[in-house]
Amino acid sequence: MAVALTFSSTIIIVKLLSDKRELDSLHGRIAVGFLIVQDLAVVIAMMVMSGLGGMGEEGSSGGMLALTLLARLGGAVLLLYALMRYVLPRIVDTLARSQELLLIFAIAWGTALAALGETAGFSKEAGAFIAGFSLASTAYREAISARLASIRDFLLLFFFIDLGSKLDFSTLGDEIGTAIVLSLFVLIGNPLIVMAIMGFMGYRKRTGFLAGLTVAQISEFSIVFVAMGISLGHVGNSALGLTTLVGLITIALSSYMILYSQHLYAWLAPWLGLFERRHPFRELAVEHAHRDGVRPDVIVFGLGRYGSRLAHALKQQDIQVLGVDFDPEVVRAQQNHGMNAHFGDGEAPDFVESLPLKDVPWVVSSLPDQASNQALLHALTLNHFKGHIAIVARDETEAEHLANHARVEVIHPFNQAADFAALDLAARIASAELSPAKEPP
Image (cartoon, rainbow, N blue to C red; front, top):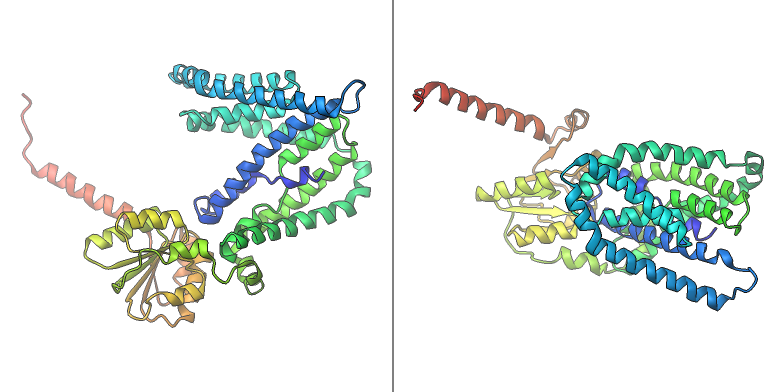
């Protein structure tokens, strides 16, 4: 049960971070990194547990069982390496000429490795995961993923229906107290553990908090893991009901915790200093790199696709630009392209105070969500910024909300891009009508 409740749901976290446009942020990449490691760990745990199915049988010893398990694990790794290195790329290259054949092969590959995993004494779940892992190593993973998305979502429905049909509701009442205790540990204890580790590693409390929220639920693999334990006779049927109940509670509550993570952080920030070093060296190393003494004409917060393009376009007009982003790799990439870029959190008043706001006429924000822009406006107000503020609105609702601020000029990237394209196209049409028609040869 302890192992089962360790894993977090990669599918849910990636979906939520993608919807919030935080998948490529610092905390998003850290979260996805350790979620992938968890997925690999659960497959190894499944293999080990299936190998321990013979414990207690007559004639079996712990040492012999361990050697047999290691041999099978080693054989599986070697077979997977050979398939991924020599067999799979050639087959996929050949079948990629037809999208239908590629889809059929992906389904057949997953089914075959699931059957092979069960035949080899592991589990069909472990074999299926390895099949997906091997397909992800090919150059056609995006095409395969896009083709399988609808089938995956459809079959996922039956996966949960099957799990629900195995629940014994007569025993759930006895598990409510235990489920609440375990759910509180997952919802509160897991984020605290991640925050403590990331604080020790030199990250700021905001990064640790946002990454920690992503582990505040258990995974669908946890339910599969326990169901597998029941089939092997390691645990009783009540364990599945307990795990499912914990999953329902933690997945439901943690989804809202992640959706409102910025509000939660603003509320809890005064008490989170315990999880941050006095010198968060990992982030400060980037924050203080490549600084120069040139006074900027404009500070651009958020160096994503739109913000970086805007910053470079302003720089080409001989305007001194200072870029700010909370992603160290984005900052390094922009610095390598000659941009004066600083690493920092635009929502933190202490960091905003360190910027040369006094003599800067303009601040532009291309931060991805309304909550971040509101926090930036609050930080600028606390630091008595007197210049102009322009904020990129992603949709009409956000634009209407920003329009209520008297000092804010709203940038409509999609509307302005369409207007510019229309003017350019109209000029080209007019030019074509005025130019004399060429006689065909």
